[in-house]
Length: 274
Length: 297
Image: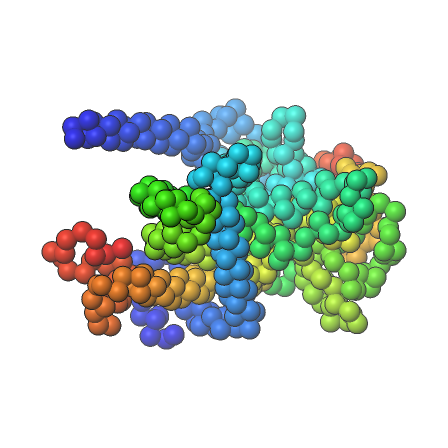
């Protein structure tokens, strides 16, 4: 980290302590926090994708009642801030849950008292589900109607057509936006700190409230987030590439460029870069 | 094609107008700074000595603009909070700061910010002093200078009826306990954990009211805050929350200043001594029912 001291720009008003960054970058509490961020993000994203698919189909097929209900779900959870939603899951739910429901004998209000992790997971997944629902819906609609007609003419019901014909094709279209969503999820997970979930940001703050090295610890957190998102960019690029077997894979640098969404060649036509 | 181009221009124009409104209406921060030039001349004769007392403030750089800016996390009643009726900050810290300002002949302006950013912002010269029920402790003392002005310990609040039978700190072991992140209450719970058989599950929130919410929602079995604040939370939620009558580790609050604010520290200490002497301090404590925390006792 001494070399990084050379990066002290002479114009800065304060000295930035790279030593502190090095000291805390791999501390147990920070690594634990980073791991929990990853766990939370992955689980919430999977939950969101499932919710997205399940809610998009009835909306697209305009199934009465369920379609509209899911429409309401999407409207509410895309229409309110995620932070607010986390507060509702963690604070409001147990606060307003009735002590008993007469016609529901198995009801136990304690079950609605979600732990920080549970509230964070459910909150993030449900929120993500609303966004994924729109992405899935767009993906489904991008498949030409002829496909549905052809499937029906083969005797499939609309739902069978969805499962065997439409959704598999829509999958390829939704990969880039879904990948983008996961990138966002990795960062959004940091909001869970407000409901006392001890992920990366919470742990970073816990340290700097004691040693007052605010920016240094935030840089520690930033480096971890950058690490996760960069690794994901590469994975996403590989996934996209595998869905496009007809295209040349290229060498290592081609992959790096693709992962970081850099232009392949300055004179490239459209469609190459993400 | 031209239709599309025109639509985009229209959209861009609308977006620009909306953004302009947002900027124009949103940014009130700088307005108060300009008031420096219009400080009531009545309280300051030409040579800079305030009409109110004998304290000379002309050599204090922070007070050259005629304003003492105070950083505070204004969500800690009754020490500092936003008065619902007026929309202005109110509380013990506000009254003491105003009293000091009056003695020195300067305006007092409070800036609301998150508690754990206060010291950084003070050092970054965002304001002149911190008055935010900040307890004096060794870690903070390394960063800032303190003028002690009040005594408070830690109080425990629990669900009305005290179902867990909490009488003292030791009873907290094995329970879920909420506190505000960055406070000495968290430090206290962490050191308590070292002596517990079953550890305390420490839930940390960004403001004290949120920690109290955790108690109300049953997420926590108890909440810790400075004693006067805990007492206030209990009184505001009578029937839902009760105060455990034990005052843990009383210690002083301090007005925090930058280590190089020697002149300001000097005049503030003088002003503080004056309001203690002339009874203003006692009056303020009585108003808020906090005479028990007097620095003189």
